[in-house]
Amino acid sequence: MDSKEKKKRENRQYYLKNKEKIKEYKLKNKEKYKETARLYRLKNKEKIQEYRKSPQGIKSHTICDWRRKGVIGDLDAVYDIYLATTECMKCSVPISGLNKHMDHDHETRLYRAVLCNSCNIGNPLDLHCHKSNKSTGIKNITKRKKRYGFEKTTKKIRHSKYFKTLEEAIQYKEQYLSELG
Image 1 (cartoon, rainbow, N blue to C red):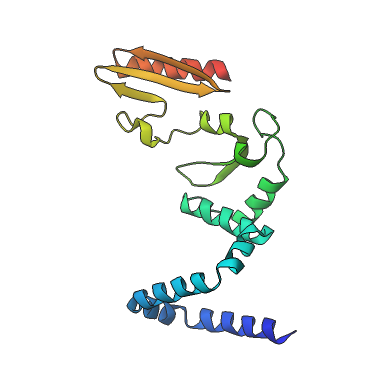
Image 2 (spheres, rainbow, N blue to C red):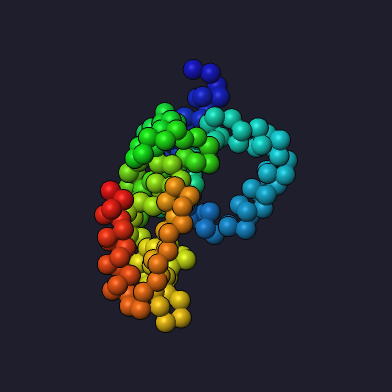
């Protein structure tokens, strides 16, 4: 084992042994840590950019983004599945790049599947309310003035219909989604 690996292992052991003390110290010296991080970023700009473009940097950024969105579980294993997936797990359309999404349950926060953009947006399993429909608290149903609207885009085709009552809109949504399969 080379000296770099040995030092890394020793640092890890020290951290695990003194975890609470380190957290406490960091809380007391928050501004000092922020300034140190800022200076490091300025000094190592090229090194950081190079790391972000590397496979490990991309993986780290993707997993960090998933955690920020509240996803829990073995994200290393999920990332391996995500990388290996070339087709939507729902509609079998070839996917890559910005059209590839890691679907997760918004209540349990667990991974469900790798989907194309259309299937991810139109997932009937997702009952979580998106920011655009906070007026009703129900996905795909919005309130505009004195009427309720069901709005959905599937495979780039926009569908919308308006009703006098919320109950009519919910009933129509359920019927529409059951016809989609």
